[in-house]
Image (tube, rainbow, N blue to C red):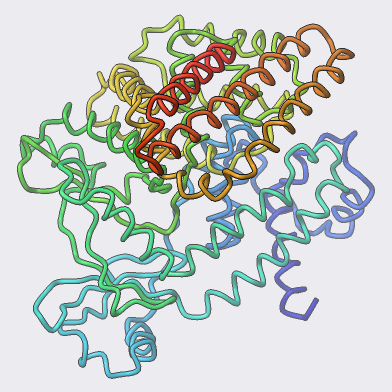
Length: 544
């Protein structure tokens, strides 16, 4: 460590002791280094013993500065790791810092553009519109008269982040050794996830690309507007976008005063969320109230305006399908299906006892479903599910954690706008429609068409692949004879369904290939495709 890092490390330890965070560890679990550290630094007392643990942790993170505040904000979404009292306090962390001098922003912009600022912008406002720990925003006008905002990374923020991240990593490696009970929190894994998120936020070209993708996804949408990004002016440390005007979504009084249709606005928030998840597989991952505005125009037909695209999430087709089927299974209180989906998706190990997992889910969820559906929180239901699945060794799924956080934001905003919002009634038709589309004949044929060039190349290898499938099927049946009855049945059904899907795919592709390559043999192609569809249908029944 260099001297500045040693000094910073001492400051971190002093803040920890000043807020008595070491005293939260039961005496029986305080290892020798912890006891020794407290003894050697006896002159730093706990000055906040009258406060609850969550509040002390929040205040300590605020004292340590922006990098630690953002860590606390991320940890506030990990309710599977911390108690409710701690998570609720971490949610209160505010990413507010003193703005840096606007003249420094001007210098930064001119360096980035390699020309005087006036060559590109008019009416540059040196007083920032907003300032946060990573960047701040200034208003300006393009030469063509369009109003814009310029987002600029704070000077020297990267060295500060890198220095604190090194110390965080050191602490994260020490924590499991000093406190074995904290190993389940996996501090190194959590820190690496945080580092990835933070570095993504430092690259404004990445944020610009996210904004462009979201804007493309919602072009001409009556529900959400994403401002235009002016890519000619963007760099890794600067982003220029259209300036927007709207009412902050948290200002309910102003929305009501202008006659906004609050029910429609709340329902559209839910629709925007599920559209991103199931239509696009790409979603805004930081939709807290500070990043959402409502247009002044047409209050009877309101739409949202979204900003700040540094954090986004994505879901592949498999994650989309498993998520939709999980939510519908919950709606139907089919906990067996939920347990099986978790195993099939690989979210929990394949050797998980499905019956035990089903019982654990039922125990947690049945009391929740005793409430009216309109009062049940989608986000908290997912949280309870993830907490239960963690006991069955569910690996952390970053995209699902981010999704759950976003869903909690959407629910909170929606019910603040319209307390009677029934998220389930709004979501169920959306989920059912999406699942129907995925298994419809046009969707299947569309996916087959997309894959035809690839499979045409692989067609000569298909006989060998079918033979290997038969061989693996036989070997698998021999190996699972030694498993427990429940696992044996599960594996048999899964292997049979995979085998049938493989045969069905082979027949369908062969029929499609014959149809596209020859004017003869239409009857054979029809028979092959029919047999393939039947094989798929039987395979689907085996997974039900």
